[in-house]
Image (cartoon, rainbow, N blue to C red; front, side):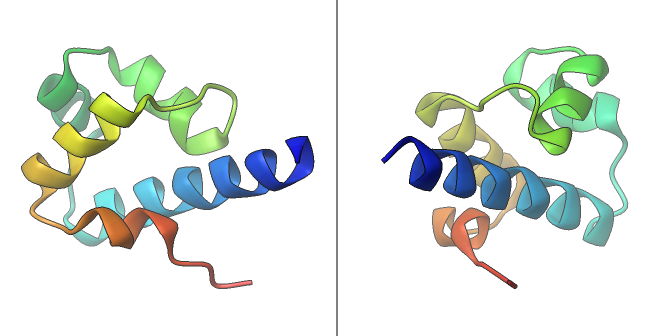
Amino acid sequence: MIEEQERLNNIIAKNLARIRADKCLSLQSVGDFIGVSNQQISLFEKGKNRISAAQLYLLAQNLDVGLNEFFISFE
């Protein structure tokens, strides 16, 4: 179960980085959407820190993507 959670967190992290890059947004601008620093967004994207459900929802709204976009696996 823990391994599955870790796998899912890594998928979310990779997708956040992909979506941000696709939209040509800086770490800071994405951090501003949810009130965290650019360093925190970097940690999210590297899978070092986890994104809360509320933060993920706000990111989806501000990045104009569906929540499902964060759960797409390219493995």
